[in-house]
Amino acid sequence: MGSPTIHTDLLFDPVQKKFIKNVSIKVDEPSGLITNVIHRDGDVEGELGDSDIDLRGKVVLPGFVDAHSHIFLHSYDEASAVVQKRDESFVERVIRSVNHCRIGLLAGYTTYRDLGSESMQDADCNVRDAINRGLIPGPRLYVATKVIASTGGFESRTENSIGGHCMPAGAEAADGPDELRKAVRRRIAAGADIIKFFGDYRRRIMRFPPKQQHPYIGSVKFPPAVPNETHVMFTQEEMNTIVEEAELADCPVAAHCITKAAAKAAAIAGALTIEHAFNMDDETLLLFKERGTILVPTLAVFEHIHKSKVQEVLVLVKRAWDLGVRLACGGDTGTYPHGDNAREMELMIEAGIPVEDVLAAGTVGGWDACGGDRCGRRFGWFEEGTAADIIALDADPREDKDALRKVSFVMKDAQVWKREGQAVGMV
Ligand SMILES: [Zn+2]
Image (cartoon, rainbow, N blue to C red; front, side):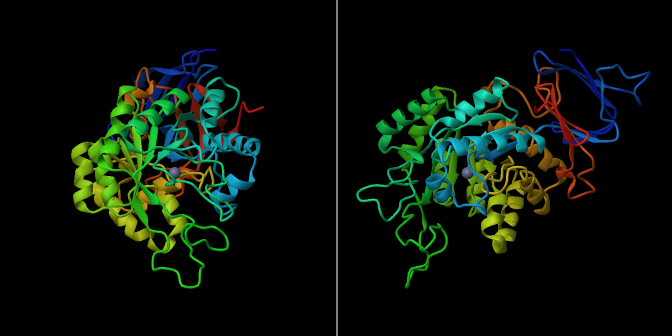
């Protein structure tokens, strides 16, 4: 244990949204915190100490925050969510999550806001705690456990389920204020850091089953124009109750919303973040701005599923930024490979949002999305008392569009996990 000093000559400060020169950062291993941020006049004077870390020549940032991930999912290119839930054992899925957490950390992601355990019940709490106890390497996890949905609203079914589904339940189903209060209370008691509810969803998920169950591709003979449209799942009163009850436990709320109607209702209810929001208009975005609602646009999953339409959503996200809507970066990681998390920030940059604003959304914006000071730790910027989550890139993201993939150094809570591009301390 000690207190190394990290020397940088080019560092991104998310608070000022500026790249600044000649900063040294003192960190404290026992507490995992930054203890001093020193602005030097020029280069480091004298020899470096034995424990010092030299990141001069690299671009240094706070660790990235993935604001929408799923540790229990692996890429839909390998297996659909239904196949993963139906065919992979609980143990296999836990083991996969251990791998995902290691890969995410090595990609520079020191925090994940993990929005739903995808039929793994409350096991995300256990993985979170295992990481916090030092048993496995991984990002700091803020987890939602089971998502909250109205009855039948987020359950995959097979045609062989007489009178019910025969898949592991994906959601905590609840209807009406009384049940929803209980559902939120159960989630809090189970260990959720964040309450996630579905504002809308494809509620008739197996009404027109294709050969291989897929939510977007119909395969019956005369399918309707939209085989499985997204519909609002809760009334305004129900959404209000979810947020009101979560607030009693000082717990932030994330809402999955594809439709404008659900997004508006969730923002009015006081959800901190709206996930996806692929169909917004100015009226909805201005409501987000007025309410301080954070948009997590999950561009990366959209690109993965609807590549031909992604430009439309990039225009929408740029519009959100132009209007001053708060943004955080999380691509629904897990639906595409962990380790490719940075795709979300790359797409935001492609949308025309300045690199500095995207990097701020991918760091301190993620902390905001975790509930800010309510989440119990400060991270995502450099200041005395914030977590010593520090990463370094081998290229400048203002000049190299692949720079966010060139992570050569990762420190989380003052512990080094990657140095010169190689994993360390993972025996
Ligand atoms: Zn998701």
